[in-house]
Length: 129
Image (cartoon, rainbow, N blue to C red; front, side, top):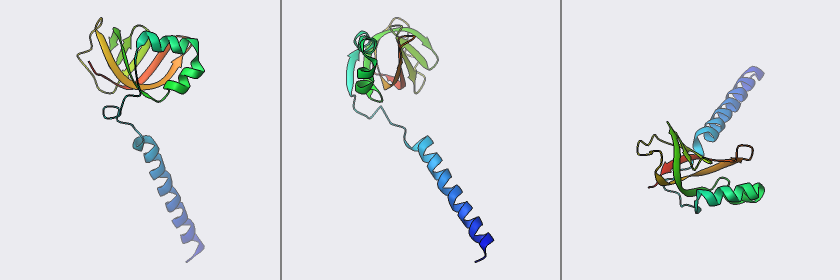
């Protein structure tokens, strides 16, 4: 084989591996919270209090975990539901049953706490009841 053909084959193999790796990272790792067991069931007041007292400890406890949080809806905006003015939940699918003022339990994955705004953020959320 000529050197030129070896280089072309090497480039094709490297590009193939890069494309497969990119697709795995982008699409392969998404969790399905509807079937996953809930790690914590807690009220909105308690979890925000824990985060405001000790962010590092709370991050170790809750970050990337599936949690069910109970509280009152204070705002609904498309795929975003705000619970008790301090928990921002990004819904996986639109839910027309979410109404301002309702007491709900919402399940999602904790993605972080903004200590400046004192807001807890969850994604892949859905309303349990």
